[in-house]
Image 1 (cartoon, rainbow, N blue to C red):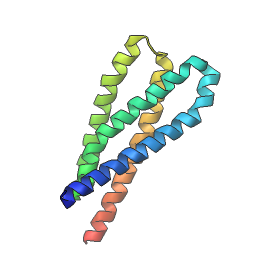
Image 2: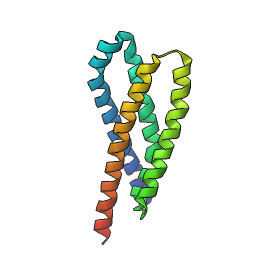
Image 3: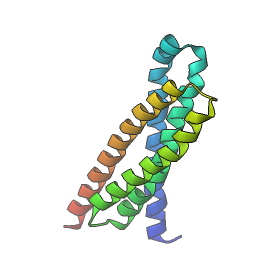
Length: 139
């Protein structure tokens, strides 16, 4: 495996791993309030909502990982592309899940929104920080 591919896989694995840890933390923090407000049956809706955000984060991590591995001079473009991919993925997953009637829609949508924004902020901050570090090392 070439060095560029190795950096790409490492960057992607790191972003996906951080996203998984964040989603798990969000779900653990939100477990008790969700049960208390919406009942025991709402837990699956919460978990699916967090899972949708994680899947969207995994897809959105692709341009971020590429930018990190290639040390792109345009990190803003990678962040913008990532945000668009995340948003489209969330829409493509949330709309059918909400309309299916299998889950409690308010709980599902709430946890998609909460986990989506947390993941977006953290992934963007990690990428910008890594890009700045790479730029400082190259200069």
